Image (cartoon, rainbow, N blue to C red; front, side, top):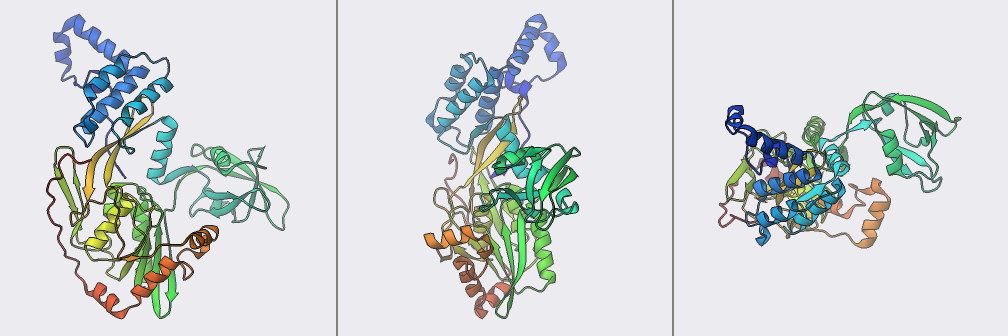
Length: 449
């Protein structure tokens, strides 16, 4: 789970953690001070400068002020005593230093990795808006879907179309990742695809790349017996997740659903704020999450009377439901707003801030520990579902090989959720609830990581 944060100033970190107060202060120190500034700027532009920038961020923000019993000042001395012949050497040194913290979530990213992360959390891509796969029978790149409001959909690309060439480069035996790199590009730039379509000769199609909002919320109306159920699947908490969730709930409410199933299985998390905004769509009063930083300062976030529906709700989770998924699940469970069905969740109760470094690389730093509204620490434990339904290996293989069965009666966890929602006493209890349970206080949380 990431929390938006401003990048640390490269100039500040180059000056050994100190800031230049005013230009007048610089002139007081004359030529000697000027030489220090020049040295600092030279350090900033070198691989060693990136090393120190990363060290400074951890020193300032990391949730464990004891740095996993490491002498973090000595680590800096060691890092800056070395000469780095390349950025790659500096990157290796940063990663080795971070490993001593014993926290896999405080991590360094090279520029490509950082760009991939920011693209994922932004919920946008620059391309033409298609999902692809390699067809098992034909071994050719095949369109699975043209995304809504995308250049591909407007150009008439259809599911099942084969991508034979990208800007003249044949795609036979090309991997999906390699094809994606060719298709993505700066918005406004042209691209030509050669397509194969059943019943037609191969043809070229010219498109213009655009910035596209990636769908992270999928929903549908299901008729389950005499009940109308709104099934919503949330894949990750991107910057657009809350807006998409709001649209889904409003559309399904307009269709007079009797209950909801919110599927968070396989959702690895994402932005903290997105999980908070989505929680507020489901209940009006009660806590959502409490975060505690390195000095024990806590911040509690609550619902704010902006719920969109009070219809009965079941939440589906599994061992890959993590981070922001667990914040939302914990909030709904503790406030008795939903019944949780499935497997034990992953157990990640740490918040990270993400920073871009001076050379385009990035650093994620764990800055806080979070707790559910009732004060439960789920780190390394996860959230226990109200109704435990673990899938067998054959069931997992069946759903993986046929995704269309997910969220249907052939999906055991979904089927159990529907059975619970169909109980008249459960439905009445949830529909009439005011959801006002209050969180308990947290003691002894200071210094935890």
